[in-house]
Image (cartoon, rainbow, N blue to C red; front, top):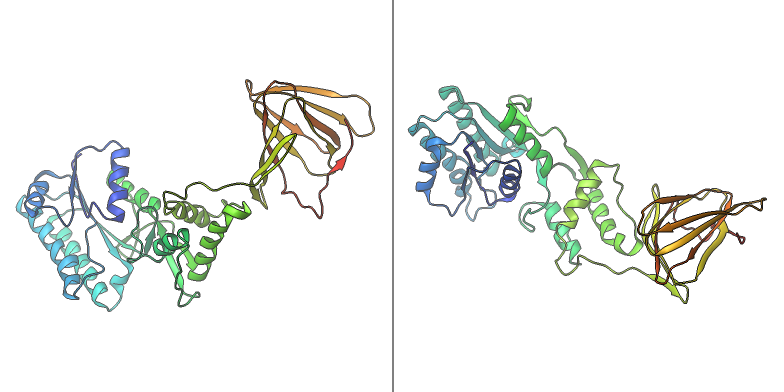
Length: 370
């Protein structure tokens, strides 16, 4: 299928082109502001679907709004008419098309032109009035507050929030692409008052967005992770990470080390527990304690070890031999004192999960030898 994408190098365009290629579409006609117009003539001869994403939203002069958002759409449609090509066209407009400002007027003019063209030529048209779109590869310090905040906060730069109470409606780039692909492959889109909509819209106050982003920054020191049960926090965190400077992908952890080895927390969560890595030197025994309610899972990933259990109030010792050569999780139930012994010649490396972060004020850890 031959697909024409205008605005191919923009935020939405770049993501769309990658997804089209991921889906196996290889005959892509890519057009952007620096592409020779003669190529548009060539592309419109036999393209079978048009994603018209090109537009102007930050011009040097006000007249460029109409030139870019209405004038270029006119040029595109003129070429399609010239070649008698009535293939489907999807255009990205803006919720500002309903507003009385130069940008909104230019987007509304482009919408009206496309609707008229569809009626005249019988071509399927999909007009998306998009709210704020966020996600990877969006240009910071341009027209997206989310992109700007992500970029600045990951670099410890100041941000400006004039009114944290402003309510924003946002759509995530992957959700936009899902809707676009449904239009391309099925002609199936969600519509309201004749306009196409992305099904998932996040309504969030600006102050809350900043609060979340600053929390993501601080998570590298407090080891917290976002609430992944929140669809917005999940995709906002993915967006935030995409703006990390390339020399800041990694961050250090505090290793609690002694002559026995080390214990290092990796992640702490309120609702999903604590994740850590434990390293034991050869011949070392760690543990010899039990819990009332706290429970853990041990996974040895390197070395050879022995995990021992004894139910409190009994004398029978239960042995579990573990090895990094055979990955298996060992549950540590409440009411059993337990330990882990390095039986190998090298370090014993164990990945550990506990159902709650360690709380020194309520440790729920009672020492007793197995």
